[in-house]
Structure formats: C-alpha cells, structure tokens
Length: 49
Image (cartoon, rainbow, N blue to C red; front, side, top):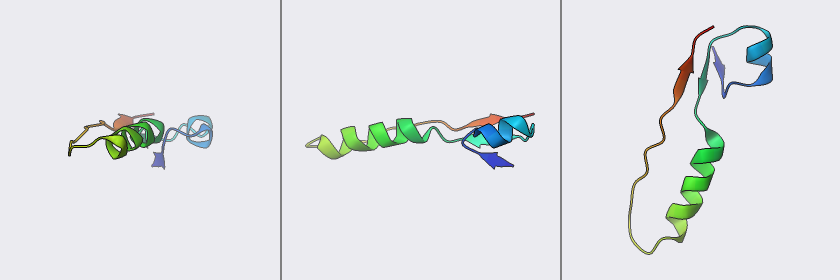
C-alpha cells in the first residue's frame, strides 16, 4: 500500500491512499489566519490498482 499517489506507486501498480497533503496545507494556513475556530474536512481517496 502506497501513500499520496506517488510516481513509484503508479509505476509499480500499487494501491495507494491519497491524503491530498497540498490541500491540507492550504486549509491549515487558512484556518490559522482566521480569528475564529473552524473545522475543514478533506477526504482521502483510496486508489485501487
């Protein structure tokens, strides 16, 4: 099982879980800059190969 849908997982035809780390980082920055408390849901994707 790979993680983050990396090139190595794609080349080896391994199933992987994509946690969308870029989206998580962007959401974390937006939340950190807010004056209030909020939650953001970012779904992970299971990519079966």
